[in-house]
Amino acid sequence: MKHGKKYNDSRKAVDAGKQYAAEEALTLVCENAKAKFDETVEAHIRLGVDSRHANQQVRGAVVLPNGTGKKVRVLVFCKEDKYEAAQSAGADYVGRQDLVDRITKENWMDFDVVIASPDMMGLVGRLGKILGPRGLMPNPKAGTVTPDVAKAVTEAKAGKIEYRLDKTNIIHCPIGKASFGTEKLSQNFETLIEAIVKAKPAAAKGTYLKSCTVASTMGVGVKVSTNKYGI
Image (cartoon, rainbow, N blue to C red; front, side, top):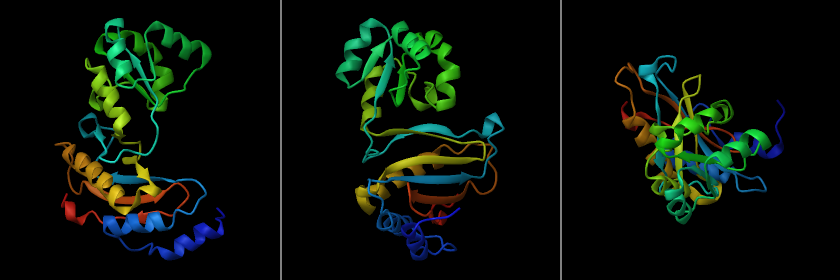
């Protein structure tokens, strides 16, 4: 794959064989984010688990202290008595069957997070084939199936992100924008890592945090040392 001059210049600034301390790695990422838009910074964390086994799944959600820098559009499925609370918390769309129809009949997908009260899951379950592949299906572990939909909306708007393993046992998560700078990105990164460490399955053996890389949308990956976490 051919890369542009900016990418190649950035690659020269990063020692591909070195594992950097988190702050140093994120400083490099910010310095090398040279696109004309505010690049998203992501963490890619490989875990020493096997996602094929149910007892080694790693999934959850965490509120990043500085948010993600992205405006999140929230859709809520709940009964009428919770409409006002959800809307007051900042929900962009609130409804029941009307929203299901809009998604299934109009292919409407103008939202980033889906929250549902438990009594709505029978209805929302019909959307599994649509929302599931997009990572939007409400889930209790992620806090998106809850009786307190207003609280869930507030957290989503504040920068709550979901983390989960992909098929190659890697977690991919946004931790902010390049414009945040090193300090805010470091705070978000540490918050995410701490949550993942706490979520370590009892069945996981050997080294848990195998490797970690941080990168901006158009930038090169920078390896982060995980030694300090001792896990």
